[in-house]
Length: 88
Image (cartoon, rainbow, N blue to C red):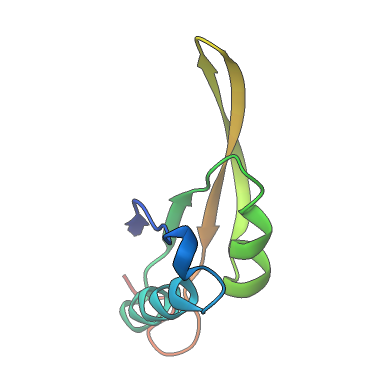
């Protein structure tokens, strides 16, 4: 599998499709190699972005206990598609 560690866009650059361009390259590579793609989504509502635009599904939720409270981070997976899918 491949794991996406971090993806962020500077507030001044948001809304230009930069993160989607990067995600398209990453998902294309995963598809070509027939690999699952895994990420831990930020607990800020970004889950729908990964699901609706890039085909991820939530497979579990990680609960984080912090000094100032707790939050939940979705654990998301995208299976390979097209050419290369099924290999690994």
